[in-house]
Image 1: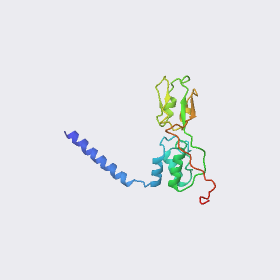
Image 2: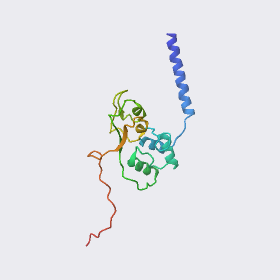
Image 3: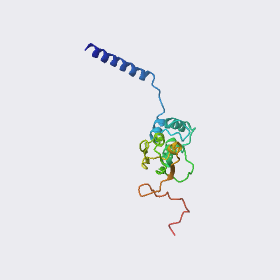
Image 4: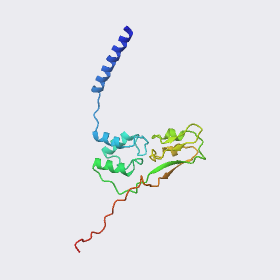
Length: 179
């Protein structure tokens, strides 16, 4: 019984010490960085040139990184980040969603692709065929770089009824409605 009481006392003491240390060593961060990081995919893929999504958000707030630098996020994320930062985006290309496709006849089941996928979009087991869950794949291309058999390729996802959107109207000449 004494041992249990000792461990409870030590646990409470260490918990209080950690709580105090958290208050003393707390570092204030920019709330805008927190908001932008919350919008990002969170895969830490590094395609933007930064180590992870937190570092990319910090660089965007500083102005060192363009809001359109996150390929897995696409144009929708770029637009949202540009609005938050109050900057304008250059007219970009059409928002094409890329997904990984595995040539299952060439797949040896080496597991390197699903270990490289930060979004868990690839399923399979060792020495068995793998497949991609298209709804989860962001098109970051980390899996295709990791595949030694080169049986993974990136394909453009064809728009269907759930992914297609009406294009924005283009500005044209004004017509006089009074005539």
